Image 1 (cartoon, rainbow, N blue to C red):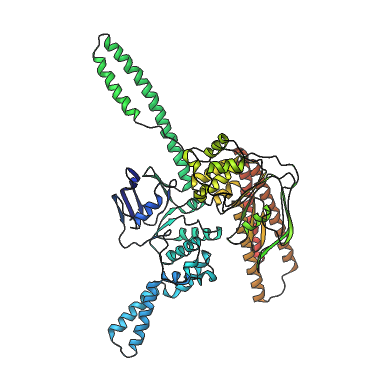
Image 2: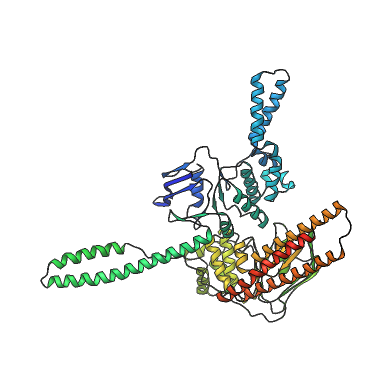
Length: 623
């Protein structure tokens, strides 16, 4: 069954320029589809047309009858004085109306036992139960907890929340309403990793239809089944997630380029043949003119095909200063509080040259504060932070500001980087600031453009410790890929805060997970960290279950030989985990050697199976 049908959709905001130009596609019930395309290609416009907020100029949109559609980017206007809890409860307004009517009927039935009242009460009672009336409070708590909407926020006036907080609350309300078709416009923008993972799990279980606009490539890979790219106002369809889309798009480009080159060779061949036939025709064979004209018509058709073009990649590199020394950064016994709120407690860490560290954690845990401590912008309450004498640091903050907002991008480069005009223009062009763009006042730039300009400025200095705070936060996918291209050749120390798991997986060789004032220091990539964390959670869960069972049973102590067996198993588990970690290190060192990576993967297989068997034995002995 088709939930959404879009046929020959046309929409323009400027005379003669269609942002959507014959867009057509269909979405089947229950599909999860990613809507892709560069900023300004019409993705959000499409969503506004689907919800009826915006009319189209031509074409038609069909939504399946009785299907309810909800758009996350829209923040409805609620009555003055409503709290966040009132907004969440509004999702269950139908159930509350049923409950109120049941209360009225209860009072009426004290004096009137007519069959009509009894039938209405029975019907409403069945509806209340069937629609989840008895579970609505528990469901509201579950969704609010998953999307990091704490009790304190739920009691706040909704109008007092930040834009990101309002978006989270609106997302929770739509989920609670059990909407049939969800339109998600950048749903992960204001979510931390915990909330993003919760949303992904929810969408994977969601039985309705999902259309998602997102720059979060990890999210797109995990959630969507199909991709639609809006390109020059039309839809290009891809039968897979983001990673499939990237490979298939490249394959299609290569195919188009190959055909174009073949057409050019054919044009050259036909042109020579036509010229020769005209020449022979002048020598007395007039029939050859007709054949030459036929060839020229074929040439005209072939010349209509345009050469396919790829988006230009960032052609810049960081200037790097070679690191000499043992330690680039030392954090010793560092604590930090703001009033009664304690962010860190006795943090002790060290960083050597060339490491790539991702600092992750939920919003509000203090990640940005730790970066400010490292940069000397904040002072620790206890302990100290030390950067080696050979360390040259560059810092990209989450919120980028410039000394004079009225200066143009070009003047900012000239004043702050002290470079020559041509060098400034060349560097700005490499970061997408071309033509008249260089004269735009920096105060008028978007968040993503500000980050891009600051990064452009940073790349001019000799650095060996690069610190980035949410570097991809305001960037579209193309700009994120630009940044990754720039960073891919940077070989010195990198420390970054990010919720972009695609970016983390690509660059991190070490994970600092900040939680409850402490950092879990894991040496390895993000996927390996997630697997390790899952194993630790299983251990913790089993240990708690064992302790609970021991208290409940209140039995005699286990035989000493059982304890010895458990201790032996735990040593063996630790030994295997260390072997797996060493293999991970080898894989990292040989990332460019495909044959070596395959050999390492073959070694991992038996070790993983053996480790799983030991976990099961450990669980049995502790049962």
